Image (cartoon, rainbow, N blue to C red):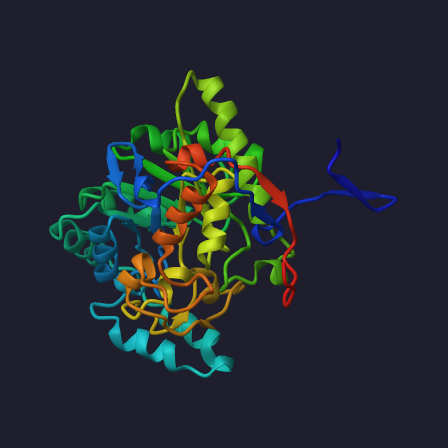
Length: 377
């Protein structure tokens, strides 16, 4: 049955679903939550939690990267952020948190115009390594050629190439594009790359040798890509499509497993649960972790799109704080809106639907059930 609908006589469009449009369905069996495993492994690195801290200055500092690592997750530092532009970015972070809304974008553009310093990249990654946790740093495709050697020499364990969208076939008549396949082949560390939002785009990224693919485009609380560029990919459909690409790539490659990592629009525990239910192996969290009291954004949240020098595609949003990072991850919950005890909620969802681990949970039944604000269901 075709999922396309007619927009007009000259154009048809495919029906796609956001995470709000779907719900997980209980099965015949339930489990004890204590028997459920949330562990996740990529390459040689094992984690007790399938949560990755998004490389966003409002959510991840070297200190919060270390804390998340000690709690069992993986923090990723933005190697083009304030931490690599300023020796001590505390004054800049405090200023951003206090800026009036109408001044925030312009002032952030000024603050982020300071040059990236290679020696600060080295220092930040060494600080994380000395804490004894897995070291992960992120660059955009545009900066990867310039700084990747610095990152690798600093001892990064997992290299993340993250942009609004990343393709395996970037074409330019003005610059020499990054050859992802060659780059990943020559690198000695696993690479996570994205975002991708379609089956075809993800399949091509998998063929480059990436260990993981980030799924998402135009989502997230701080993004306005749909308003500025008109581009958006509803997350439930995007993750399910990339999950299918991974399945087909396994057949094509003789069993090579590429991790599907949902990235964007995952602000509550329910959204996180549903991302796993449609095929994610792990989730990259920005908003959810930016609400912690330790987050460098001080209750504010923004991504790199918010301070783009020419065409901002995001803004600074006020989230407030809800508890410590430990409470965000493990509770106890003090509200019933899915902001605290993310691990507990995920564990209980698996137990309630009868699954013991995340790979099994990808087989859970899902229903299309659009959420109506204010309704009782």
